[in-house]
Image 1 (spheres, helix red, strand yellow):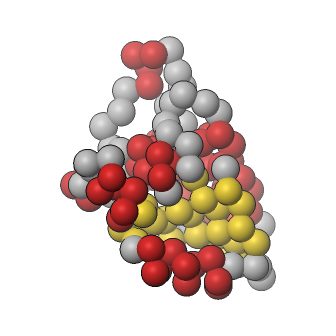
Image 2 (cartoon, rainbow, N blue to C red; image 1 turned 120 degrees about the horizontal axis):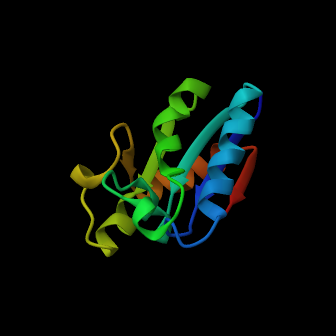
Length: 118
């Protein structure tokens, strides 16, 4: 089993990279790999609980984040520094997402066999 870290760096709903990164997470999860997901930089906007993509004629792929546990993806993180830089708090995030510090992110990266940055 490989340790895979998928890092989301793109903001929500203005490009397909967020959806593609989630799809990649689900694919690796379905093959029983040890997957961790990190929302970093503008990617932390994907973790906001109250978004209405329908208002801008987009499909709600963000609800997929809530289903990651079904694929045994239990390590879902949002960078604390990125949240602070954007003025976001943990209370605004989808339930189950853990805040993680920069030293902890370094540890996540060093523990990963493969890292995908999208």
